[in-house]
Amino acid sequence: MATCALKSLNGFSIHVNRENETPELCYKDNIVRYTTPAVNNIECSQVITGRYVNISNFHINRDARYLVLCEVEIDVISMPSIYYHFTSVCSNGTFGSDCNNFCHCLNYERCSENAECPGECADGWTGTTCNQSILYFFIMCQ
Image (cartoon, rainbow, N blue to C red):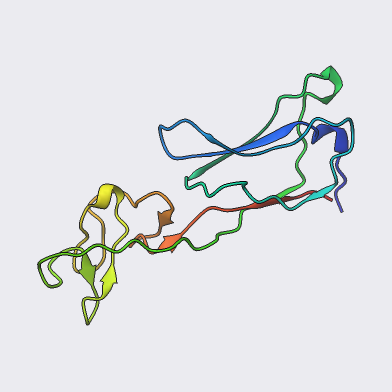
């Protein structure tokens, strides 16, 4: 079992961002001397999509300018799918036997009939066919 120096958690913040974008604040700890609990289940105060999570500590106390994390878990919460309508039947944008499955490609690009995006997945989606939603998390430190 790992133990954490609780003072190292005071003042920490969590930011989430997409590639090449300014990070959005998910959570900021109130700097109250040595009162941060050892186990933190944190949910972002707003819905944020992105691929990158930055956990940092900007504490002004010289003795607490380090951050010790024993365990970090990032949990996925499915985000609602965005559906697009296309004029061609299963030629692009949809796939499946009934053409009723939709793609999650970056910048709304159309996918191939077998659900492969021509480039990257849209923010919040991952996998070879961009069908796995990503990114929501909590921190646990015991």
